Length: 280
Ligand code: GLU
Image (cartoon, rainbow, N blue to C red; front, side, top):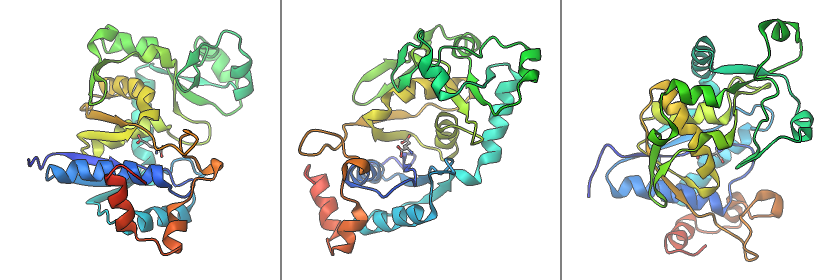
């Protein structure tokens, strides 16, 4: 089977060292493309300037090379801030985003906050602020997507927004459940949602291979694709690697870093072969 147009990506955030879960995801994305004669690209998701560190970026390249994975091109989000900003300005001009001055504590304290898939959905406190009220505020703000308005704008009736998921089949997007998500953070000119949507399109990604923990985010990405006129990739949300207690691997729970295995003289190609065979 050969489909040269297939493009997959591995998009780690350099906020820590990669572990076996990252390796498994990278191998899946890589192999999906290579099996079809397609391309595998890497993206460093470093818009979080406070948590991203250059040594973790270096570590990502070393880990991938150690696993025997070669990538065809590289994108670095911190070099694309002007692109995210331009998209945000476009959404501002269409009045689809609004500034939000709420603190995390204020949002958490709001009794009306319904539970979204990735924490409480924003209860809409700043949605109706008048221009005068906005002008009177001086503190930092983030920018939120007015989700209901966005859906009206794309003329969808939610029914029309779907994506193909290799595990879930045809999924009807339900972005309202995610609430008015942040598109530009107080401390960064973009958010994960905005950057990832623009970048998957810019890198020509046809198939997004990533963990099932990001399934809910796809509802949001689907709306952004419709608003920004971007192509819709197919999605492959894979199960997460879990530890012996059944918990997903996480650095804070002491998941062993690939760098540590490398330093201990383990063979990366052999590890990759074990991952492909379904073990770790
Ligand atoms: N950067 C994200 C992470 O490391 C992954 C983004 C994605 O695959 O969409 O969790």
